[in-house]
Length: 443
Image (tube, rainbow, N blue to C red):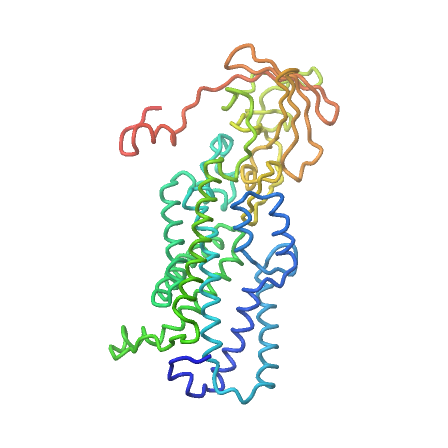
């Protein structure tokens, strides 16, 4: 294999060879999945995830020594890479340069980063990663919402902006597929993913490690053009064009490989569009009670036959109840709620594993329910994994369109009866869309 390059004919300096060996080992460890959990998750995705989810898990690889990725894991990988690079330097002392290996490493990094960006970009393009807040979310006190959840909800109320961010991310990935525009794509990654990294730090998100990995790939790719850009924009001197021309790979082969990746991204685009048409992936898809969605005032509550008066301190006092469009019922009370957290992006078709609606919310308890519309029963189970065993079995009746009566028993054996009256509430978000954001609102 030969390259039309002056660099390949010259010997590299010792420090250049040492640095290259380190980054070669490090990036290969981040490109080639060596963590068995990656294959376990991918195998599980074929049975539990959606079609787009399979693509998402295929292109997302975050090595972790524990159950969740940590920054410490990257330091350990870097230390191991340094050790292997040191051994490589002792063994291989005669090699004059690694120009050919450097070229192929850049190709692998470019394509890896392009596919990784597409995985998240398509979720944003169709406004699925940060969906609109649920009715329960809109009726939760701001102080009961974590920083990350507030950030995600803020993005969800402006789907057009979220989609724009997705197109920027996807454009950066496509630019990486071509050598002449790779530096533009890498520079865009540094700006875009750098902002994602800072957002994860500031809002305590769960994708900090993955954003660091993507930034590392972007820095590696962009560094190739930094000397020429510096000479051109700072020193105002001659900057020669890219000196690497892979003669060993003929044009049709390169075109075929590039086309294959673009076709894969195109198929993923279609799968993401189908995912969006099916209702996204963050919220459950099982329909709830017909025409029941909304917030309800707890007009009457009895536990073991004893009336429970509205209270700001009594943990038995339910302040309001929300029925979502899907089969979720949430309750706001004064009882302390142990937070459930959503640390990483997960795509599943199993409603019981979707935790976006209640993750990061401390002000409400979320129950999934199974409705028997023949026997008029509701079987409630707390969705928060910190409250396994918190269940209710209710019989329900609806004397009118605004009232729901519940009679039943809790998992602790207490009899519970409620009278719920629907609140005809208008939401600023919906009203603003109807009248236009620049017009006056009347609530």
